[in-house]
Length: 462
Image 1 (cartoon, one colour):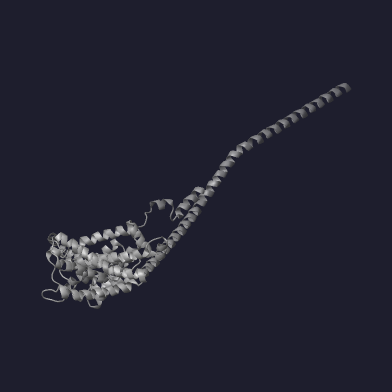
Image 2 (cartoon, rainbow, N blue to C red):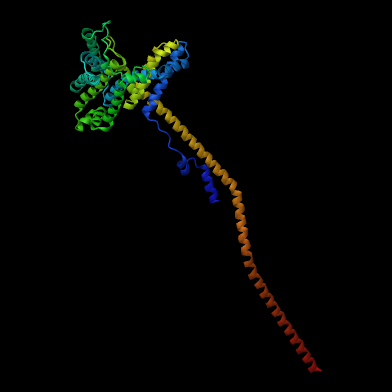
């Protein structure tokens, strides 16, 4: 019966050691990736709703949107070229955010980096490698300067970086509006600069031919190098540790002996330098001149890139590619359908909204996970109850067999005891028979003696 009970327990085990060994570890998706995927899904759903409102088919619209950015090498190259400034501005916002700062000034930093690089390219004459190196240094210096000022105001006077960087955006806007018409005016329009010469362009003939005449340029190489460099700084250096520590808790970092004010200035300067390189990639790579009266949207799209990428270097790179695809494909979608190109900008705006409200999405994901775990727990309890019922049923089915087995055991025991009990009874009966025979013999002898005595007496009387 004990074996039966053990087998019954095996029926009722919902998750024993054997099942635990056979089960695989569930695939884990990082929280930032989950938030990004949910934001993308919500953005695409919202875009589909807007397409339906305009009387268009969302499936057709999205088909042309993605085909417009991926259907051939030329369009893939244009998508990469469009994404290049977004990679750098997204990296700029993400780096500052990692260190506890909110860099809203990427547009102004991009403008100043592009202005410094364009001015140098239109003024100097040098071999292309030397020219490009000088333009890169000029773009880094211009962007870093536009990040240094808000960082200094934050460190010395605790001026919030959001306010100061927005002010620096407009300061850069009006400087460009004055400088271009005054010193670098174009041949036909006063609202744009002269075209940069080939020796000052980031485009390479071999790279252009590889992508069938697209706008892809060396800026993409600079962006990939910047992603790797920022990842190394943040995760592999003491400087990155100190910058992040100051961002997480300024007072704890000060108590630990870190120079927090220096780190704030340095952080915004590095963020500005990244946006300055984005200006070089935009105005000397994707475009051929710089226009006035325009505050580049790449700086603000960099906020969406950073948050959609989970404020990480690699995530910002991937998010920039996705937004570059939307920018590159929306024109083709508009040309092939009646869907307005602003739908692409709407999707980007919704992505920014959901990425910025990642706390709400995390709560939603936590609630969904709790419901899922509760469902699994209820299922496990149901399986356990079912296993217990099966064990009890098996025990009930095994009870008659066990009783029959016990009866057979008892009969076998009784059959073994019976012969041993019969032998003493037979011996006793034999003894009693022998004693009875002895008594009869004695009685016969006494009777014989009595007859003999009687006969002797009769003879004497005669």
